[in-house]
Image 1 (tube, rainbow, N blue to C red):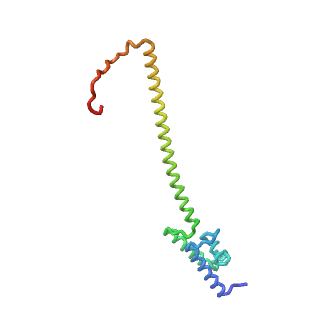
Image 2: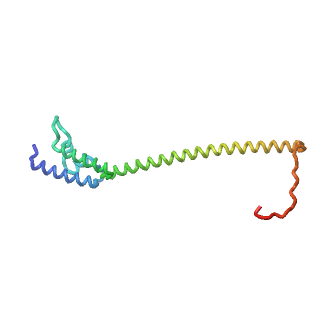
Amino acid sequence: MRTTDDQRRQAEDRIQAAMDRLLRGEIPPGGRCDLKTLAAQAGVNRTGFYPKAGRPGPFQHLAEEFSRRRDLLQGAGTIPDPREAQIARLKEEVSGLRERLAERDTKVEELTDFRQRAISQLAAQHLEIERLRQQLAGGSHQQVTHLPRPRHTTTIGPC
């Protein structure tokens, strides 16, 4: 059964109305801002949006208009599909988290290097203290010069 001109015009009107709703962001649950949802909302078969046997589909011009308008909105930063907006937001968030993770990795690496240097310095100081203690205990304290004790004087000022 062939569609009449009146039926085609009514279908085009339903497609235009559904197109306007979708581009305003009125996306049905489980739907997207795409041709499949457009066809479902308009009550038409989505094959009408695609060419057949070398000739354009009956609603191909509307599919092209829908895609063009959607791309313009997305280019202007207005994304009519809330899921696409959520995906864009999540991608941006992931990018920020990756940057923070890289900064933290760098900081952890710096702190690990600092810790290793500090442990090495403490170990070297400990060995030097042990060597000096052994030297002092071994009777080599004759080589140690004792400094005179300071006399009791009254300190003036903060020192």
